[in-house]
Image 1 (tube, chains in turn brown, orange):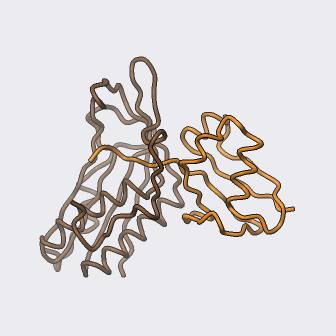
Image 2: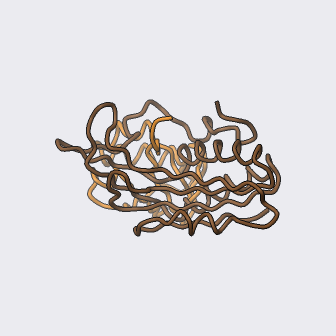
Length: 157
Length: 84
């Protein structure tokens, strides 16, 4: 099992640097996902975002996702980077790069990875509006990261 | 009695105005016991605790897990990272 590359930083993310971590001669498919800060939520304009991470557990949960993907899809390299602190609209908050020998596994694994990251990895997002702010998800209906976990061996949709 | 540290993030950190707390719990207490005690000692986070996962030593834990000396807990509100 290959361990994923994991970066948590308050600096601007470089997708090229993260993508380079997974490129290998035996991997013909490299898929890089960028999560970027959007300018509105449910019609409410967002001024900027703030992210907070529980770093030690981010490492554990990302590693678990990578290992589960390798068990399901075979050879796979993964690199993950997330920004903490303030992220302005349009900026990159997260980069996930996944390399596999062929694209079929790559596309499905990337899809499943991003969904599972957003369910189980302890990073929280605060949206700041003109007239207030809110921690996204904190008023969710009961969401259970163990029971609701994505089946990483199949396409989530 | 055990001294157990709990890390606080996001809304918890803001409401309790600190990024960590320490609770004294009876030996043999479970995660559930800890959460109940926390809610009693800090009523302003009671409602939040219903929708919160708990980690023990950086791993998701079940309510029934028994706490031991040196355990670090964390309160993890839902991490919803954006709409699908």
